[in-house]
Length: 295
Image 1: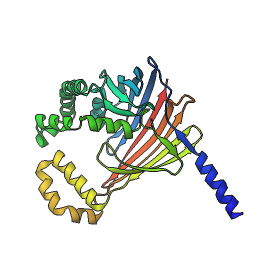
Image 2: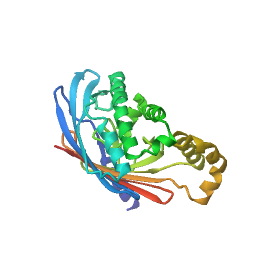
Image 3: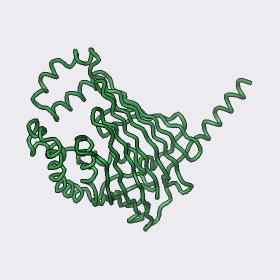
Image 4: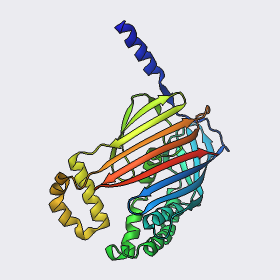
């Protein structure tokens, strides 16, 4: 009986797998609406709605060229919700910028073919974002000059980081090219520089990905020091000298978790995504709920 049970379990596990490879042809277009609800500690909640289009610009023998563009962004961020206003402005900055993605045959993004143009457009728009940031929080300029803010912002706009965000953040392209089996695990670095471990569960045409922070003490130290050097350079040396005591005290604890469920259509395109992300640091908990819906 044990052997029969083992064989049955093995067969079920083998069946619980799914390859994500949307059927594509030139001219296909999908429209998505992403609703992001962010509960910001001490400032309240903000909702950001983003409308985007994803179209097949070219079909090649070895893959495709996809055009990704945010077409509209709205939010309910109030004037007293500084962080909410800045997050909404950051999303608005990307509106109207068409990103061309070269993919493999399964639609997995491999490169940004018009990266130079994308970077130029973001650089132009970054000035508007920084002006909005300083209007919402004038004290920022005392911590970091305007030019330094722009330099820090543009440092995150490398092709590698933009592509990495598409591959690992919650979006309709994130799973393309993967053959996913229940129990499969992956490690990755998210767009905040935090090393994560992800576990997959497959249920029919649905995939649930559960991720959690997977940092050693040394990696946590390195991450905190890097963040302080960027945001408050004057305090970096003090943090370096006291980082072990701070970590041992438990005052700075990075606890990040994310659960995202992707529902696929019969043709392989993502129909909807529901995700919850929690990030707790120094007792402050940031919660982000994201819903992506194919129109």
